[in-house]
Image (cartoon, rainbow, N blue to C red; front, side, top):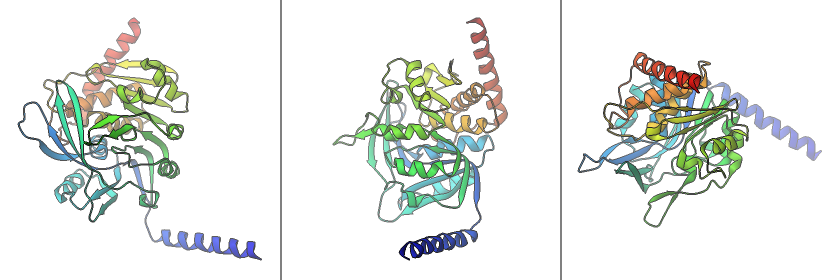
Length: 333
């Protein structure tokens, strides 16, 4: 009798939930990015004071994806200090903020980002609450969910939940590798929970970050370690040295596109990811997608902040030249 009653109650709850969800329209996206938005204070060599701007991976990934006409949405948490003009800016670019929660009485994640002699130093000013399973909206699906924490705000349990809602999961692990000392300076630590990597289809990080995850010191061997866990595509961005990609057991290097002027590299890796993922959804070859990511990033670094100009045709033209260069190099080798 007790088993029957328990089963009845469970089915009643599921029935209630299904009826409730019928009243909501399911949102379907190309790319949904999950992670904290940020308020960044960027200190560039030519500026005497820090420049306050909208930041965080969801910003740069979504804006880059939208420039290639992908339908982009965001799941995030911010404080009540998050400026309304940032929301207007994102919506003006048709970024869907369906999963963004503003929490009263807390501060948005915020960093001071200082560039000195080509190196970046980060200082955490404030951190929003973590993104929990109950913060993930029920009524959406995505072709790709890009997991992009910046301050440890996403857990393995949340990633497990996201796995059910997407055809593919993509990961930038930077926020899972960051630690903060007593003065809130940011350094890197080892990845504690490697189960996350087993859930991922596409991986992207910097060279410094993958060295905190993989046992090997060589770039190719480190990428192969990630690939062997089941990840289809492994990408490592190398700054001015370009990037590297591993897919179908093939390792390839992609040279960087040098901009006429390097203004602000903040968000370049996220822009690469957003452009790569948007192009990959068009069933394009991963090498081509990486060239598109590199081309889009070259437009970003020539502009301070997230409001960079990059027409789709110009991005593709630059990517074609880079792709031809890569193919010629491969032929000669």
